[in-house]
Image 1 (cartoon, helix red, strand yellow):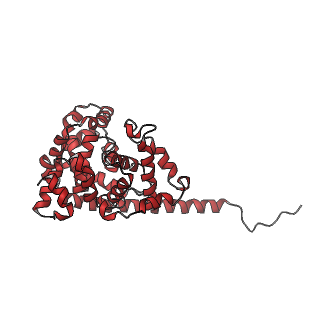
Image 2 (cartoon, one colour):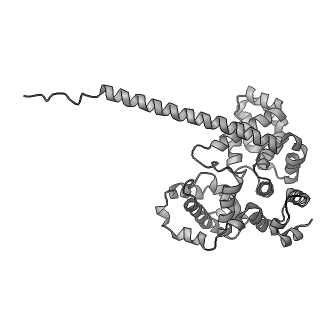
Image 3 (cartoon, helix red, strand yellow):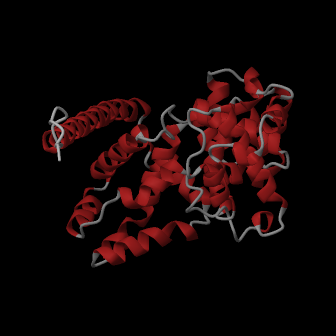
Amino acid sequence: MYWTSVCLVGIAEIGKGSDWEEFRDLVRGGIPVAYRNKIWQEVSGALDMRQPGYYKDLLSKQKVEACQWWSDIEMDLHRTFPTNVLFSPGGQGIERLKNVLLAYSLHNPTVGYCQGMNLLAGTLLLTNNSEEEAFWIMTAMLKRHLPEDYFTQQLLSPQADQRVLRELVQEIMPRLTMHLQEMHVDLTAVTFSWFLTLFTDCLPVETLLRVWDVFFVEGMLAVFRIAVAILWMNEKEIIKCRNGAAVYCYMKQMTLSMNQADKLIKAAFVTLKSYIQPDKVELKRQRHQRSVRQELMLEQQQRQQQQLLRMKAVASTSPSSDKKDVQC
């Protein structure tokens, strides 16, 4: 199978048998720049979701300042890839990014805007000259490829996924887990943003695009495999760090120099494949989602009880409403 045949036939015609596995392996090798936007639109589901005129209608629906998410969006616009010429002051990317984020907040008012979405949209604009196409790919990504509650206020799924990642690391790299515990390092403090931004805040752009190639085809399983592979490739250097501050410093920097995308993809999908199986990961995710949901419900009940106690305390100390008027 070759990329020219894939683009001529279309992803929908490939099916789910051996042809799909061949296509998946082709994607792991990297989608050529010339075909990336077309392939992403198809495998993300953006082409199926797209409605002619809908994007322009969203942007004409209300003034920018009237959008309840505008202040948050405006704050993050100039934080998005500030060293990239497209998003530098005066660059065309800022206006496009603003439009995509505003349109999505109006399209999905339940979620609106959440920090991290600017990096997702920004990455799509780096690979796509059409802001409307970027909007539809992002919409498909958040609807079909990430859990529904990934960007809700409680962040239920991201919390659960971090627990899954810690379990996988403990199973595959027990020495690393023990070292992090001894150094009092919270792995989530480093890896939480990897999941929430799909590595946009840590990997070099060329490597990031290769990771996204696989993500659009293989979903969240690819995110777990890439995250574990990053840690596995850096395990020896992390263990050399002799205190918590050194560990945090190294782990924050280690991804920035990962320019060998082929090496990362091979580690994630060949070397570590047998340790990170779809069924195994899904069972872990379901178990931890239940746990996090129960904990959130318990926290909510405790807050309600505390609020009730405060209300009773205030009522007991307030002057009696039937006190007689004092006569002079």
